[in-house]
Image (cartoon, rainbow, N blue to C red; front, side, top):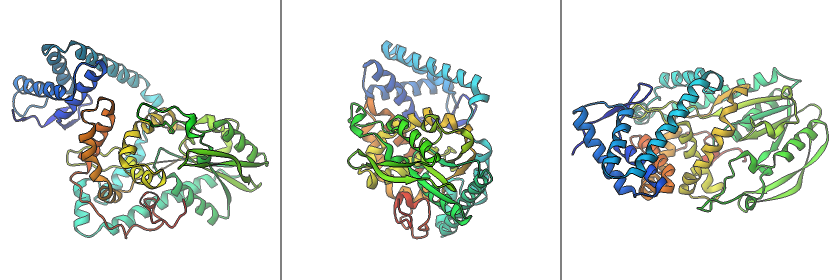
Length: 446
């Protein structure tokens, strides 16, 4: 039967594109949880659900998520899959409880920077790059270099403004944190902030937190041989806390050295001492995590937070997720910095997101300044380098119950990028661009 359902209504009232594959994936996850059947049967059930939707609601209908889920439960029971039906019902109930809890806690724990997001959206709209169609038109008109220049100018001004706000807190503040989730471009931002401080005659000393990782073999492997090195507890937090406190007290320390290719750390390698007029600069994924510098009073800290607050919509009107933008960046960087294939980064990403949601996002409300590192022009450049990896990943993981997170993620990125014109020529991207941190060719040393 050919589907005539094009859209569905989400719980918040928004209308989005209908996708039978999402129904099949949800059914497969429930079935895998109880080991009742494989992906082909899940897809068959999803087809039956779609047929019942058409029979119940008619052609060109727009059913709600709740109505679809009700039919999934009924169809599973009708097809004698009682165990999967119970698992699916439990899943719905748990998600409902999570939504209810979030509703009660919204005012206290909402860390979404709405004002900043609105500013980003308005900027994108003013420059015609808030949609895939808009980006395609810019590329077709030969105006991508102009967009690149505008994006770089906006970012540089935000970094300069953040450095200025920091300097207004001197001399009380001694530690400048640049924090943010994976591949948000903390390193380039740290360099640019350092340049701004130097221009203002301020001296700084950078503490490289990456050297404080424990040896990789200290961390347990999962069933696929992958390590969770995204958690803050993969770092020697006690030693970081001790060293920061000693530096602020005027003591000389010896920092470790970590080799990412071998996954091993050597203690006491680099001599460091913070001068009386120097600022300690820390670029860290977990700069907002209190345990890292718990011995240092908060009034001595300034926290700049960076995130890819992208606002680009695909043909279905769905905005690209910030984390998906960062995933693309990291897929490239991991290939040359950590000797990982793009597929490995994709399958590891669930560790990244879990740690972000637990150890970074909850503390956004504690930051002193926010910088947007999303560059709309980067998407066609990243697509040219990475798009080829997503169709085979979707095919490989679709029927793998233990890799459904990778399948869903790959499919989502594929759907976002599929209509975007790829760009192979990156010559218009400056050597000082944050994108160079990921694609190479930077004037900076990382």
